[in-house]
Image 1 (cartoon, rainbow, N blue to C red):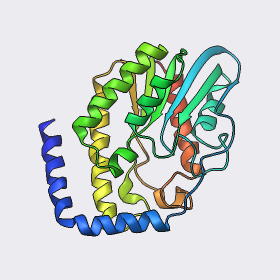
Image 2: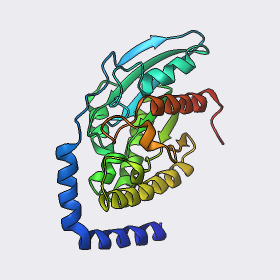
Image 3: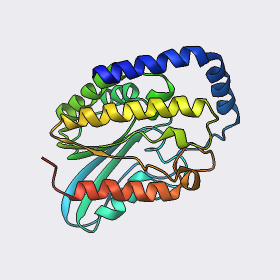
Length: 243
């Protein structure tokens, strides 16, 4: 944790020197980047045959399917499609553009409890863009996991890694370098935290290929990314929980 803290201090110091440039580039990116809608379609459903599996999808705009037209093409649809031959999947999606771990916690506190055996979670990008401290995020991860276990009886959580933002085509340099460095830091923090949780598993984000597989805004997944991502989540859920 000390190395993470030291790295964070170093990045923060560099940011302070480059703050005017990063601020202007951030404003520019927000202005010129196309605002894509969340994927259309139902946000809960039931599909397949076999052993019952209640599955909750949680997260940000990527979990909400920004970058594709329908939920069938997005993370939930791609995952359920690969599980439905073996499981009777009852699924629900709680995700929205701009979501952070903090806003997802607030949302889950506000909804009625219902049991979900597993949860697939996509968070971290908005923590990067908002400059969330690693220590703050760790506390929020603890709170979210505790809430899922206690209120929703969740026995298994599949966490997607923070993507390699230094490859996002929408981001100019040096903003791309800065956000990429922050994303890599929070990805390591998430992976380390998961390693200490018996009921949590980590799925690494793609290491390369973002340019050719991104949506038209250069910031969100395109259809191929969702296809690969859903397949990875499904493989994880179809395998025994790692010891």
